[in-house]
Length: 303
Image 1 (cartoon, rainbow, N blue to C red):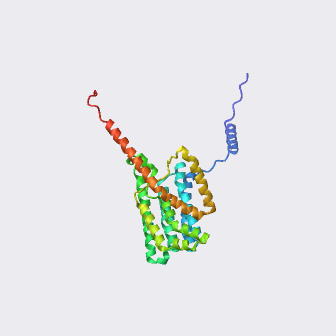
Image 2: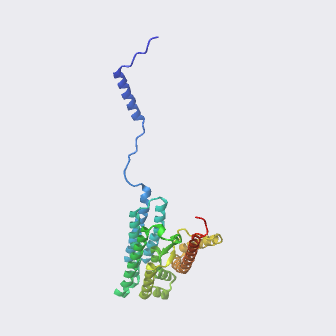
Image 3: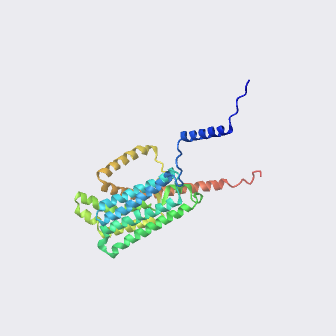
């Protein structure tokens, strides 16, 4: 049997080079790799940017005396503020930058823009005295947001578990909505042709009282439902769904009346929120006393 003739080294190198070129041609092109954050981590910050732009746009509408459009822009910013934080936690995209950016946007959208709109709509007629409630509202909003950011630094073990479902004081979007209550009433009165109600709603004294009252609610220690882990009893699920549907229909048919009614409903819920907080606190204190009493060792028990 004749042995096969060995391949010449040069021919072997040429054949190997041809195979490598053929593999490179048949290989799919590699996707370019970029360094940076994934798009999922940027989406919450993009939403916060949209909310900030909505607050700035509301101020621009107020300068043009388009107060209805300004109120809609602030309401849109409030809707975005209710989504961006939850979306960041869902996408696991929470960051220190996002928290600080969200607080700065909240201060402008819910601390500066509502006071600015009300000043141009009503309080401007009182000159310097009309600016004082606006200044108080903006300062209290800044203090409320600073307190909220400081509470994020503390660990969860320093607070009882039941406090997770409550805010300390009225949150920023709700405070902006309550502050704009006279504007909502005035716009509804204008659409209905009620000149007397419109004059009352746009009176500087009424707007000043509302701004000062909401300012104190912002910096108060009032426990307010956060609805983060709010449980609805089974027998109330259907009425809640029906009520939400009716409110959505009212919001489409008559938005100013719906927004004004929403402010009254929110104020009516505050006493129930305080009662719920106190009931949970009493239950937690009773459980702690029960655990302390049963943690004492029995003197007759063996070591």
